[in-house]
Image (cartoon, rainbow, N blue to C red):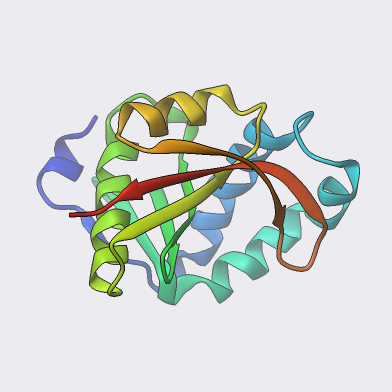
Length: 161
């Protein structure tokens, strides 16, 4: 499945990608967050909110394609790897690692020597993935989800050389 990505199918997101990004983001977000975050955050994140947020974040988003289809995306805000999501049928294919490396490069290009990201404590799959790729858990903190509520999370960091 990674042949399209290995061939260089990372690109900047385009406005017309927003709906597809949201269609990947929402179910992935549900998998990672339902049962792991306060109910107030779930209420603040209805399905349609992902359409709006995806469109707003297009300038900060890189997508990975396999063939003509978007298989995943990453959003970078300054020194934060803000979102990393892979379409369900591409999970485990190596695309997440490629997108994470692209995010790290973008943080470096933004002039930073350290990247950070937030992971909710119950998202064991993501935590294992980040640790496997050299990220360190710096412990719990209260992450202020934009437009929502404080969310218990772990701050992961990676020194970028």
